[in-house]
Image 1 (cartoon, rainbow over the protein chains, first blue to last red):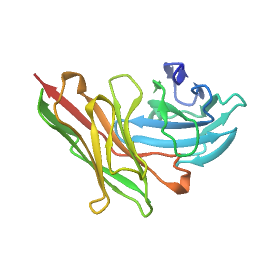
Image 2 (spheres, helix red, strand yellow):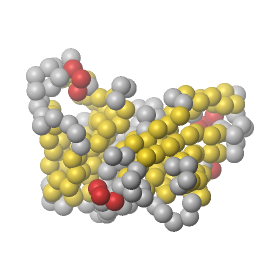
Image 3 (cartoon, each protein chain N blue to C red):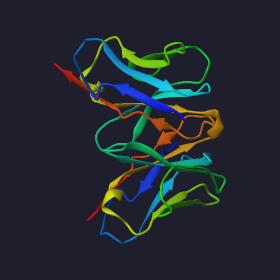
Image 4 (cartoon, helix red, strand yellow):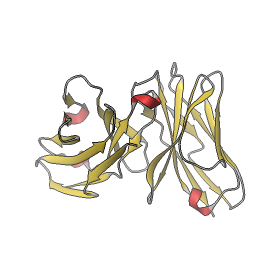
Length: 112
Length: 115
């Protein structure tokens, strides 16, 4: 089985722009979660989608949003980018509640 | 609220020595516990997980961890370190009120292995 894929792997944006990141889960997995990783804050949960519905949400401002499509692929969007949004964004998929999450390689976002 | 504390941001061992990475958690309800490893410029790879079955959990690459409820700990060990074990290790917890679907991570411990 192919693993979790994320595109693009690297992104450079400027302050004020918006960005969309994409995640394709492992085939058959219906839960997709997003995490932000920074040197200062570590790994923080953004949100989780299951069957196109946001099921859990972390403590991030409304500039961070996401969605999931009927094929379980997910996108996250960050609007009005700030320098502090520079991070590695990780996507993880899981087959069901309580099962382990499998992580993709991440998208490295740099905001200038 | 739940939290995870990893003692030591960096741990150095010699090749062949015991690896011990410490993790303590706080949770008002029985959690699931995980150890993940991250190599440079890569995502996270699951080493092992505790989901309320056996308290001693064996994982990949010779790692194991023991869940100790009385100590609220879930330390990761490996009898003999290998150079390829050098990476960053994260302990994580998930809770039933999130459907065990969200992970709260510790700050990570960088394992350095010297020849």
